Length: 134
Image 1 (cartoon, one colour):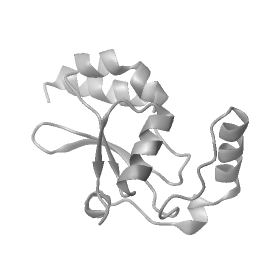
Image 2 (cartoon, one colour; image 1 turned 120 degrees about the vertical axis):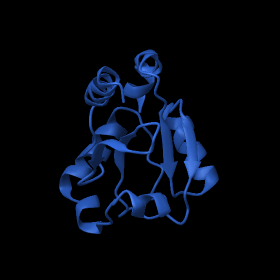
Image 3 (cartoon, helix red, strand yellow; image 1 turned 30 degrees about the vertical axis):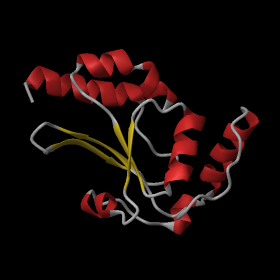
């Protein structure tokens, strides 16, 4: 999230905006947003309708595999506090770019919680769309 906030000028230049969708409770989602410095609009989807529409998976096994534990340990060693398990820890996320007509132009469904595209990959996808006139 920090990487995307650092790229806010490029995102705006591409005439794009980022919307975060969370199934968490309002206070939990706001605490996460404040903790991560996410400078984007946050929408709550407690019934996970968007998660189903976008085909996001639910996997306890992939959510708690050793590399995920290692990433959480790395983040805590870097000073990020452990907030405990918030909601359904098996719900996987994703990153999508949707154009003004509602067409998905980029889709990355996370295989596990550590599997996210980089800010550079997302900006590249936006640039390609902008060049295509989408």
